[in-house]
Length: 316
Image (tube, rainbow, N blue to C red):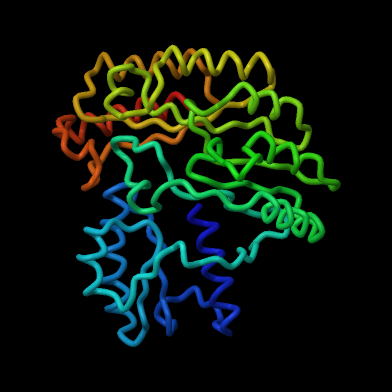
């Protein structure tokens, strides 16, 4: 999503005759596209702003992206403007002649206890299906070979009678030599219809990113994920039955508040059972404004690091 947003920003600026420079010291305008899902990311924004101000005092500095109200207040005095990311309606200018990113929806209704997306991106909003199909047709004509559909929860896509399975089928039926990927799916919304559509669509990738976040039921409940470990395992069985060659990747958070060693080992056990093709592993860090931030961050940083290292070794 961030890469797609950055392409849209670049497209809008180029339409106004701006030229790109990769050196902030030479720029008249510097835009930082913020992702504040993790506190560590927003901390880097503060240091980045300070560095740019030292290197280039004449540049106009603008922030956009996922920014909490609290961070906006603190950063507003350090930058010239803060732009809402939803203002960028222009199509992305694809950097690659092969790979194109298309946002099909934005926002999230899930309110996972650790996540700020519903507060920075607001509730789910889907683009019109006919608009997406036209955009994909244009990209096919431009000979793009790989098209990735983007959304915080693509499974929830809905435009009238067109839901995500129907959108995939419509795109799959388009003529041309191309492949369709999509990110990201929520396990609780991965329907039987969607699984069958992926299985029956020759142009839709069989690599499915399905964040599990934890292998322990109590932690999943505290995360407000809306499914149990048993639910997730049953879902994987359904996928593997319908799509034998499916590759499942995932996201995992270690060191969530109150996570015990036993609960962490449940995650280790699940990884061994599922045999994920890949995993993106993060150490928990509290974000102000989320429900999880009200919980005591009681897993020591050295323990989080140890658990993260343990999981990373499992994917080498």
